Image (tube, rainbow, N blue to C red; front, side):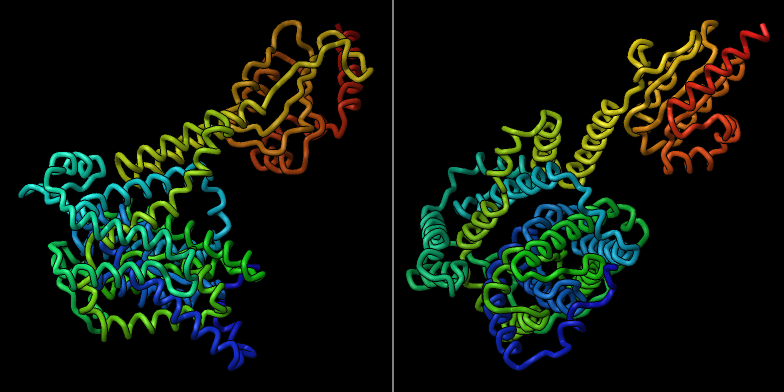
Length: 546
């Protein structure tokens, strides 16, 4: 059973000094990687750099401490950028805090009620579609800073399409110096990993970009020009919660919770493959909830497990949650001591970092493969989810994508569910007397397939009907109703009704619904041959009585 016990408490048994040293080194390396990413993702989310680092500190610490994975590293991720930006634009930081706390509560409840395994029921087409859509929205959102474009007074686009329109309208204000800094930063991000694996390319790009602007006094926007950058410990603040705001942000809170669950558990699965361990999915969901609530109370944004940072932790020697805790503490030191230096980072450099983040998360190869190889209905779900993510938002995209997926699933299941009449000369060597009709039921009997039962004919030529349910595993309420109507119709017209090959699950359902008493347990047979023999006897007795 998936224990609700933090992995930290398990791994600390027999913990040795040698592993502590490895975890500390891994935590420092991951903190260096997380620093520029946390700042960049916070800016992409429409908040300041402090909020991003506070999220990595508070949520990172809590999720490592309470988490169900040995190596998970948590913090702000690209998946949340667009939805967070939308919440902040519509409802401010109060609305974001409310949505994040509510999402945290949902995540804790999901873990307590052991729903970790249900995340696998989110279709791959939906996750691929909205992930690619998020990547596009991040890229579009950073074009302004990469090109140094200045919008006209009063122009504050929120939606992706609005941002594109504003960009084209203001493209005459392109700052070539900003493009130069952005291009150099992007080049470093692409080339540096081939030079060194030890020092993250994002950190090198940040340092080089800041030096270019400072040394050559370039007229390029920096974080300090746009945000008030100051250090200090994260400050606890209880948001002004109210019922109206809760109703307003409820859909966003549900989306954040689902995204956090999907991304964190996916990261855990990737980590399991790298370490040979097994995570505790329900404990991880509880930890994600605690981490998100903590982040919101300290002015942060939504957080979840970050696959790239988790992989870097494993590659750097981290094997226990201690590495994630160290990563959070190192970021805390940076926030307190070095945060003012973040004001020197050029906005085009941040844009370049987010371009790379968008490319790495876009999954264009799986997207193209699905388009080429998947059934047309799956491609429809994929494309619709992608388009809605870009044009509208994740709430709409996931909701519509899930509805479409359910409809597609029901259509496929109803296609698998059939009711066919036995041909009299093809009945496994068993002859059928006149007036006896055998119908073979196949597949799950649910509301999408109940219409097949309703079409079974009962007329003056019918003496006995046998339903063979050998391949029926599930019977839902709608199908039960259709069966009840068929049984009632047979009774009204004096037609004998038999069942054969009813499996245990279906039999329990029929019994619970009271249908067995209507049919009569003596009219339910384990094999079709015995049902037909009984039908023959019934027909012969009916002939004698006539």
